[in-house]
Image (tube, rainbow, N blue to C red; front, side, top):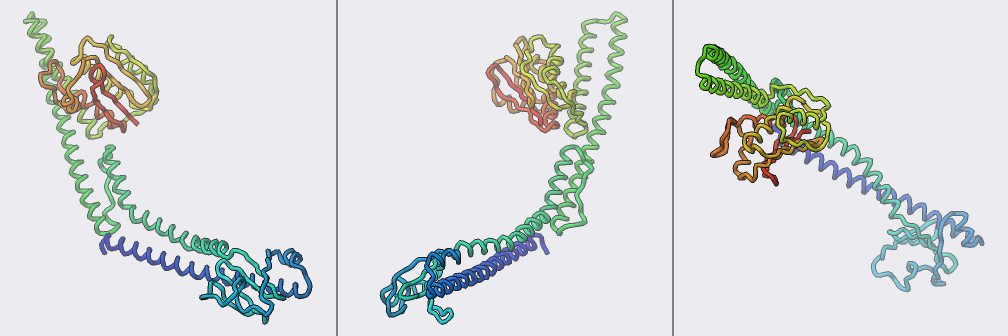
Length: 408
């Protein structure tokens, strides 16, 4: 049976059972409560009539029987009609005539008024039968519906358990647990098929990421080895009295390539979740001042502590300040710290919105941009925020570009 038919049939059957049980229990409870309560009122009125015929006063009857009576004048020749009616009632008007101990009685349902004729007067007992009956009906409904609601809750929870497992698996894989898989052996056929496809997808993703890590590790080794040799040759040429200016240019370019390789490796590890967060209680303002010590034009404001990875947050802040140095030199940079965020704003003036939209894309550079940047640093900032359960937000501030790093 398919999951759709099973769920639909089960829910419809459950609904029908609930409605049928509620209707039957309500009908039974109402009739039972009304019958018992009316019978009790009839007995009280008959007893009051007997005592009053024996000479007891109405007050004595009320006190002894704990009831509330009232009188109404009736016809001297007897009670041919219900109380308060001069002629035959059109229809029954809710009154019905019964016999109790050889005495004619009139009962009005609802609200449950009982009348007996004694010595030319009506003795009427009026108590609300509706309220107690409704309470009893509600009690029965609660007794019936309680287990039904509990059963329905259990049923829904059991039905959604595979969906919750899939959601948990997605979250674990997103957090870097690439080896986690769904159970393919249990559950309805559709969910088993979903689990198989999900696991196949996870296998492909894990294999590709493993290959990417291997490629990046190999790339790092293959690039850094010749870079190290080039640097050694530059030093030897410098010692041998070579052209200093050209050698410094070569050394600078080698350093740039080395930095690019290091940042690419860092970005790759962050993107595939190959970095374990080492959260610790951190004084964010002190961390910001330590990182910003290289830049005298940086003003650190605010205070706050948070449980974050000190190294990664420091790396992200360093990348943001380096970006300000390249694109807004000789301007004051303000770093604002709160317990849940870190904001860096430069004084470089307005920036087009289309530029802001692409800031976190690796290797993207604004048209006409100058400087030594290669567009990877802000990508690292974004991935650091994602690993901390937060976001990296770029926007145009009052003074220039404002980038906010959040975490949870």
